[in-house]
Length: 174
Image 1: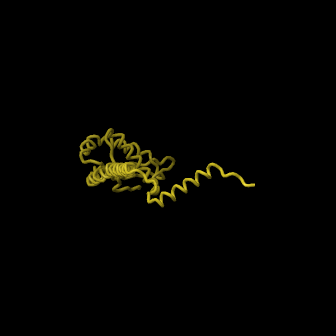
Image 2: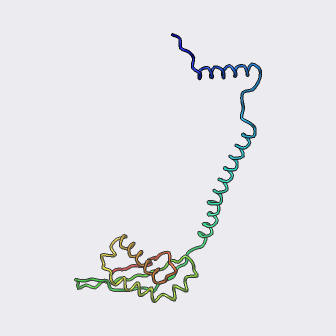
Image 3: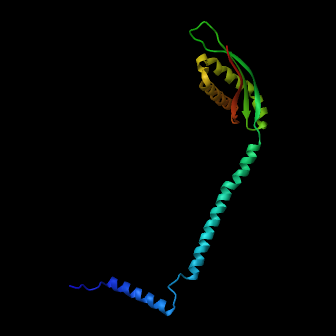
């Protein structure tokens, strides 16, 4: 039994015949309109240009700001030497801690303000350091914790200003 060709098959056959006839007659195949091509190219150029502009605006301006900020060196404020006895509960031997500290500040203009609040800073140091045990200062982890705690206490004492870091010049446990 021969089946009848479906309508879709007929349509495909007609399209193929129309294409071969168009080729034979010298007519070009169906093209996209010139206006559509121009609009598509313009859209691509606009998107590419706006993307490039956004990139340079977001990342290009930060290089100048970062370079200006990096060019400004930090300032330092010396803190008077601190000598305290450590907490040695349960032992007869008294141990002392001698510390020379420098405060790193982001701007030299903060120096007079820190100098004026130095008694408050020294009080915070003395109070904290006297509570320490010799085992609290063991190893680099102990010194790191000490540095972080002193930084936090200085920032509390000089608020709303802030220091960048506490730097140790000398640490002696005796």
